[in-house]
Amino acid sequence: MTIRIAVINGPNLNLLGVRQPEIYGYDTLADLESQMRAAAGNNAQLSFMQSNHEGEIIEEIHRARNEADAIIINPAAYSHTSVAILDALNTFEGKVMEVHLSNIHKREKFRHHSWVSGRADAVICGMGMAGYLAALNYLMAS
Ligand code: DHK
Image (cartoon, rainbow, N blue to C red):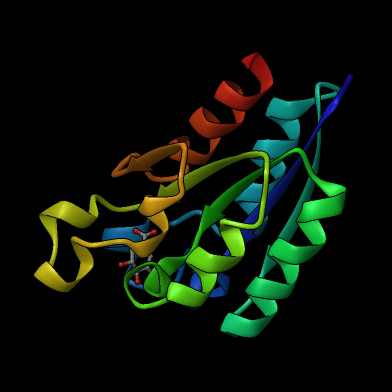
């Protein structure tokens, strides 16, 4: 059976490629989507969603409860603030992969803690977009 994966990106990630590229890289969100779709081929069914709004991310996680087998999420700044996103993820029964482009532990102290890590089955950070592909490959192999 083809695994259905909801890829969710949080605030400011719509600006990938132009926002602090020395930290987040030069590839855009559209580049990420095409790289992941190419890697998935027919082996995974991917949906992509990005929002700058906490509530919309929560709604997307609720949608995924019925329509996805796994979630790959980069909650971006909400990682460090959102108990509400953690609570939403705790209602999801499939695998949750948390991804950060940058190594949050090498950066400011306020980025070191992620609420979402309390639910995530795996956390990948510091690998740029390769982190999303690693999460995808893991899910396709599991
Ligand atoms: C992205 C963000 O926008 C930051 O707020 C996080 C994360 C780190 C990333 O590395 O992908 O602190």
